[in-house]
Image (cartoon, helix red, strand yellow):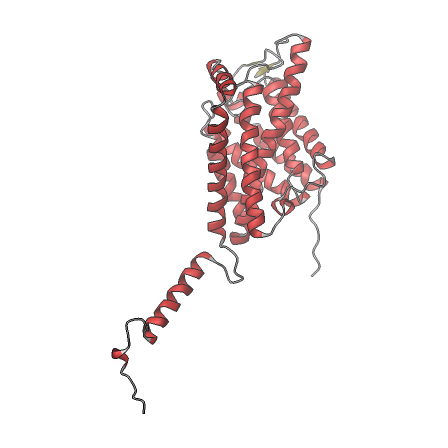
Length: 325
């Protein structure tokens, strides 16, 4: 013979139906918080993971290499110069790129995605699109500098060094700004753009990241408000290049040649930053609205016309693909 045991007489190890239901509800809420309907990690958590991974890796790299006596002594000597040098820039930007790629690689494994989906396919690396962007960047920068010179705001000046040293610095800066282009484009228009777009769409994501890009440039000592606004505009232009070409290689080439042209060839401040080893003893004259002042030509009002021109050229070179109705 068996007897029904009252619910309040159950042993402590046996949870009630109400408790079981509450626990299941809690598990559902927690799963909803971290995972989407297809079981994927939600976008916000992935962005946090990628950013945290990058910060951990870049900090570990800097700390580890700084403990090597020879590297530590060299870094101290570079900082004592008080100006940016091609070797110092290349070292710092290369570490940042390594940390960025490492964090993106981990996220790609977690998400079962490839670098091509983040806008950086290995196919076409430094190929046609890269060189098209490089030509556009240097040509439009030259047009900007010519416009400032025509309004009596800029002079080239004489050579800053001998032929051998000029060639060496030119090649070093070329390598530096290719690395800078890869880092800045992949960090703001690569993984972050691809992932944030999944949540809010391509152009809202591009707008958010361009504002962050501008805010980051505003931290440079010589930067001004107009230069920071221009950086926001450039971020939107680079996103437009990504949208039309399908990857970042065109924007990387444009970014690298523009920075190389400013810092080395025309020997003017780049986003408020001046560096040693430039080609010419150039000089600015006139109001800051024309020359950009301490920010360099990126802080000139003329730069917005250049951005508009570049956007028109990209629109012409890479027409929008028609979609079937």
